[in-house]
Amino acid sequence: MSAQRKDDHVRLAIEQQDTRSGINQFDEVSFVHHALAGIDRPQVSLGTSFAGISWQVPLYINAMTGGTAKTGVINRGLATAARETGVPLASGSVHAYLKDPACADTFSVLRRENPDGFVMANVNATASVADTRRAIDLLEADALQIHVNTAQETAMPEGDRSFGSWVSQIEKITAAVDLPVIVKEVGNGLSRETVLTLRQLGVRVADLGGRGGTDFARIENGRRPLGDYGFLHDWGQSTAACLLDAQDAGLPVLASGGVRHPLDAARALALGASGVGASGVFLRTLLDGGVEALIAQIANWLDQLAALQTMLGARTPAELASKDLLVHGTLRTFCADRDIDTGRLARRSRSADALHDSTGSAR
Image 1 (tube, rainbow, N blue to C red):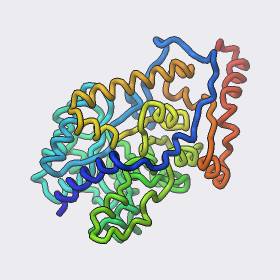
Image 2 (cartoon, rainbow, N blue to C red):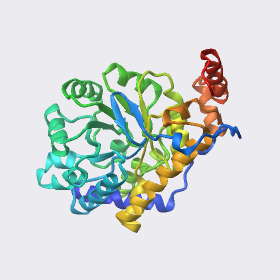
Image 3 (cartoon, helix red, strand yellow):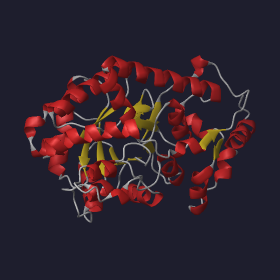
């Protein structure tokens, strides 16, 4: 059942990529164009640092799959692309391995094909400390992702229905492991209140995992004979909304969910993300064109992100968070209801200019 479910997830995720347009609130975020803000390309770096972690690029391949022969082949391709482009990489949930060690190779291939890369192991919020350590050891992981997914579990025919222990278990895991712990939603978003709770639990990073990309509640409902959980489709907050909600929450955040192209990545970084993850768009490329096509796509994304930084005058990804942004439409309504000052975002460069003037620094 578990193996079939993993293969079903891939098939249904690709069907979403092919047929679903959806509402992506990244389109409701735009940069204010300042015609003389640009800098020289050699001044631009893509490096990012957060929570004691340093990456040479702010883009990463986020958690997808593993546990079957087919998904092992996918993971080999993802790991090869990560190795060739230098992007960090997260495994899919290793729950299948914890239940059946015979499928270990479908996950460990991520490290074998990418021996020097940054690899994140992924477990669920009910994993024991012992099982978490097994997952870390399997991948020789550099960081740990704990995924949270109540909407998916609710729609899943054989899913969990007991969520009350998740907070205490996340705290136990975080205290027990020596690696940075990243808590990740799978597509329904982390609210500001949740991010604040994670900070109190000792979690180092929040991967906001918002609505807009692969919808796992929709996938699980597609596995139900009656498809009777359609009311959970598009549940939660978009990634853009989560980024706005999490500002000044005191925890570094990663942005994933609905990232379609380098402009979305730049928007996410400008909204405060330290790194930006993509899954579905990379999976589609890998399955359609093979690993060389995925390598070319990631390299192109990184080149275009550097080009955007050059045009916007951001020497680093972190400097994008000082660039002026406009928030429109339904996302602006969300901000009004959540008491988020969008006007401040539109005037951020004035504060940066004032700081430069007061310190006597050259622009």
